[in-house]
Image (cartoon, rainbow, N blue to C red; front, side):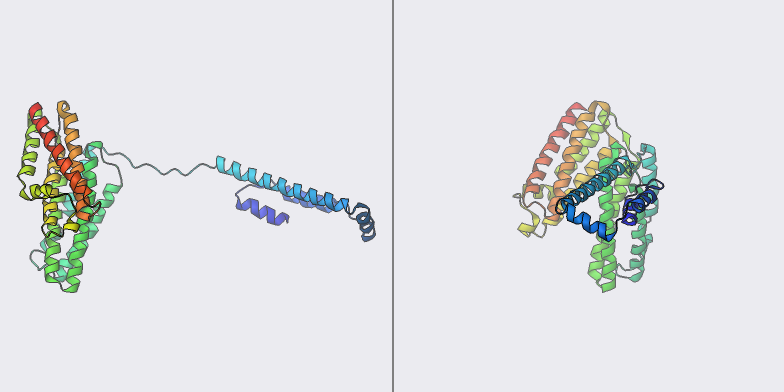
Length: 333
């Protein structure tokens, strides 16, 4: 019994005081021992009152033991320090820009080492280079996960991560098409890969060369981005449609419209990172960026078929706000 209790307390990581168990055993040995005759006489005298007393004493001892053990467990819990997971370190703007420039150099510059250009997309040589590129892109993503970006780059950091995931998925599609001997599938996947590469380069350049603009310079950036969005025929066609999802309409050109609008919205966003607002236009620039990000989220949901017709309605509302914001900045700049 005492051995079991000692092991139980040790499992609770409770340090049993030295000699406690031995003293308990000694106390048990020193207790008076009665012969059978005495026990018989005692039992006749005390029964049934003696048995009831022994039962009550046993229950009391058990309850006391539970209270003691529970106290030990509680003390152990409140006195044992909790494991603290270290927070990710914050990076300075310069550190973050250097990180992005370095990873851009090793991943998207000389992308695929031209092995999918001088060789057919379905070739094993292209597939092998796609595999190597995935490894380098995963390292890029791992580098981003080692720290938190400066506040100025939080939103574009999220887009950068998303497009890293997309380009790796497209590279895996190239590899799968190569293994299957699917010529058209490999070509289509490689086109998607190159489009994502261009997006990653644009985002990396926006971060690396980010600087604060003058009021006139920022107003010019906003005017250019707004004009390009308004001049996008596929964008206007998408916004003018009844707010339903591409999946429900089954229109073959709906995905192209979403892709074209996403390109315009994210290019506009990246331009606001590359040339960010001066102090006098900071609040207006932040509002514009928030509305563009709302449009970007709606486009992602439309692309994935989430939310039915709701994202299309939200996109229309967000782009209307973007137009208002741009007009406001143009007047202030």
